[in-house]
Image 1 (cartoon, rainbow, N blue to C red):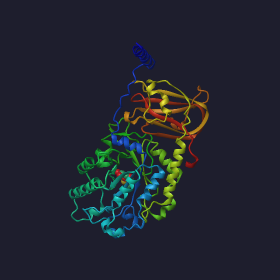
Image 2: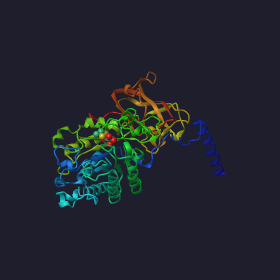
Image 3: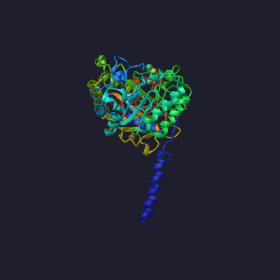
Image 4: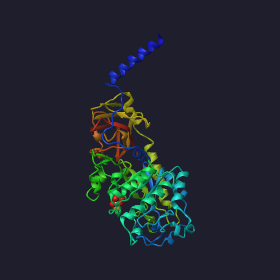
Length: 486
Ligand code: IPT
């Protein structure tokens, strides 16, 4: 009897809930192209370290070697990949990519298929293997290892018998070594620089090697390798992703890079392929280490700008720290990155909206409550009703607060949904002003950050103005930027 009564009450309660919320609380359906499992994992990294290291490091101001430098000169005096990992740990960077072979063709591992490698270096009497040391250091430090095997190879071009067919096999053999003999590889990088003669059918062969051996390996692809890309280039090496920056692009437009810098930088709204932008930028002017650039290491505030226009523009930041001739990361590079990390953590650890009373014009039901936006729980999110693409979400703060930064996150596994949004503030809940820097925002994606002159307010309104589907948002916050970042 008691059980029946409980069952009846539960039944009545659920009718009440669904009549309050208007419908059963099923999750919103995905909208348009959605990320695969590799892209979801990649977005979660936020930042990846790039290490440009090789024979160029031992020449005077060379960034693109011609393939003629003597292998003997490669001789780091104190190489210590664990020291590189310390920089990553203090900067909160969970993944790293090493240039196993840059355009000069010199191999940092003793490949069976060439003599142009560490085998013939002075370093460790030719017995060394930088790739091995790198992947071991990554494993020991819980860092995800990635490999850059430059498709363009100037040393191979010096061979009088060079042909793209023989090179196809050479590259395939080297890629197989790296994809099968060095443990788990989380990313591989197909640089488009100088690689125009390498056609899509060649990449198709190389793609099979990556996919067969490393199903979780994210592929950075450009130009002719685009059909296989998990992530795209974003059109510049200055760290500036576009506004908007859609994860979607158009599989036809992206092939022609020169004609499509805007398409790379902004992505394509409602594009038919999900290939988000990766932001490659160096902490120094050059990709390789040059002592004369020690005074030009990007400052903390420059790095914060880059973080905001990459991670904060729906991208992942691939930031280069070039090891020097000792084989170590320069202390200034490490220092600035760790201060950046402290500043980021200090800024985003205090969401000023926490403690607010929230109301919204578009409610799906309690499982998708707007309170989920400020709960710091990755598994919950706010969503609106199917068919209703706009929403005003109003936060009444416990007291007046000053803030100069905001962050919004969409549920990326459900695709790009919102296409127009802004943020307003008020002191009485009646007269509203728009934060000017948010007046024409479009994309959200994984993370969108906006900085502005400090405003003081008692109310904040997130306005979702248009979209392809009802909004699905993970988190929203307003913050005060840490002084460390200024
Ligand atoms: C540029 C390539 O053209 C592009 O495909 C991509 O690989 C990019 O490099 C990576 O930064 S070339 C560069 C000199 C702008």
